[in-house]
Length: 45
Image (cartoon, rainbow, N blue to C red; front, top):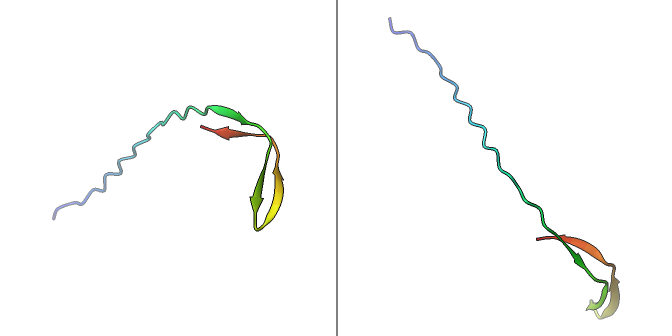
């Protein structure tokens, strides 16, 4: 009889994510026919 062995191979991929934050200034945009204000926020780049 052949003995079946299960080999579990675990691979851990370490991904280094460099998050660059870019500040977005506040502005106004027209959406759905209305002017809406957009606050200043940080955007991932």
